[in-house]
Length: 323
Ligand code: SF4
Ligand code: SF4
Image (tube, rainbow, N blue to C red; front, side):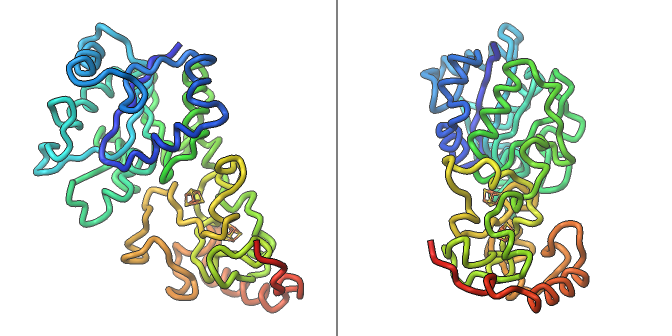
């Protein structure tokens, strides 16, 4: 049995929408089979107003125990550090998080905004938003670098815009079944089981990536090339399991002909690299250090790419078919 409070800060509700689509396990399974008791979630429980406030205050005063605090969305500090741009149950949302986080056995940031600040924290950041323990790639965030929950763990970040539903539900299962110790976190406090490999792992366009053959249009089928060079796919330097654990059990962005734009990385949406857009291509903006596959450098990559392109077999250059 694990009690869960899910709070919603500065965000679009996308992670709740994603979570409600979880399949392995489903949200219902979490409650009926894994003993999760949802004390508060804005879309799942009937508590609201004074009763919700009383419930949260009972956790803060120690009357009720909280196992898992989930936060979706940024912590909004504006204006002028008051947090009054985001009021919740009569007080700034940030004050609820400050009071509840020390009471939780584990705290989980769901989605890019809670993890790293995401879109709202991108300059000029008028709401003065930040993530729970990061502001973009910089450690600290709202709770501060030294924060740990009662378990001794820092915030577990499940980034993504939104996070994949099964990343969320499977971490909740691990927490509810007492397997907190099995969760290994990377440098950005992401569970390695979902974020150690690159988005490119499992991509059905990998053979075209190797021969540097590109699609011409968004949406072209997987036999028409890779999305890296012309379309700015970040799959070779983004850590996610989007091509291993498919979305809706059947697809991913790259399978659908859409470049990965790196939404699980702390600096997303990378406006600093491509002002005004989340997309950029090697062709348009040129190869810069952040834009070559992780583990290589621009010069080596450029030489390798030229050789691969020159040596590409005929089948790799053909439009096989458009899906
Ligand atoms: S760059 Fe993108 S489309 Fe190309 S192989 Fe890697 S993940 Fe797939
Ligand atoms: S494919 Fe890339 S942009 Fe799309 S959800 Fe996965 S990590 Fe995010």
